Image (cartoon, rainbow, N blue to C red; front, side, top):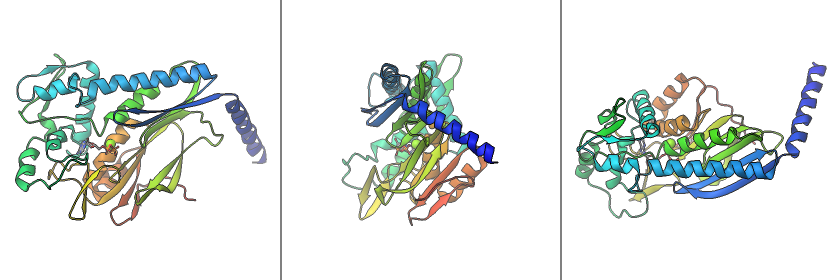
Length: 330
Ligand code: ADP
Ligand code: MG
């Protein structure tokens, strides 16, 4: 036992010694409308910056593909042609929509990229002055239906079956971009580790700039400058969806920016969901899904998925976690 411990100690000091001779660089930049932090641990400064710039270029490229604001994007073309005609898309966008539909199926429609027909009704940018009427909500809600997002694999087209439908990647795009940036950075020779953090949706791999490895603090939804606890992770993604960042308020009630496709209203019951699993895209999509499903059905789903864990803070500040989550407290 003692020998084993000693060996471990030697390995450990070797790693931290090595890590000290590495270059660790970080860039903070606004992408996809949010704050990204891209970190690389590499043999030297040049390689670290090459990795960071590669990651950023990839995120910018993906933004151009999936943005529903950018009128030039393929996503905007799909939305414009809703109820009119199928639109030819790149394999990459096709595959992303295919995976999004798989998550809709898994979550029984809680996750649905066609939620976006509601963004004409619910706007979380401060521009809403009155609560939408139940009729308006009911009308817009009819256009949410992932089964009417039709994919044609042969012709590589996407067709929104009804006029009025719209898709948006707000709940999966950042995770996908973080995954892709990580993959490209990881493939660069001389890069030994890194972190891509999209405003709390993050993925890390390999060596960290700290000898103890990557640690991720989980913010308290009551006060985001406070920390609830921390996770010790390696080659892992941690994604937090919270209602404290984007919401509207009417008559003292908060409405978060996640829409329940079943009702057309923003979700209630949960303040934040932190999802932990190796894949940032899946983590992103599932965090949103748990919000919609609510804590009982949400936890139930996560507990059935291998290698996926989550932490939920309810509206009553109760902490709930999946079976195998290892959250450390100070
Ligand atoms: P955050 O932006 O806090 O990371 P999420 O990853 O949970 O939050 O994504 C929230 C965004 O997802 C919303 O702003 C909206 O664009 C989109 N969205 C809202 N409701 C749904 C839903 N039911 N299914 C899929 N996407 C949704
Ligand atoms: Mg999400």
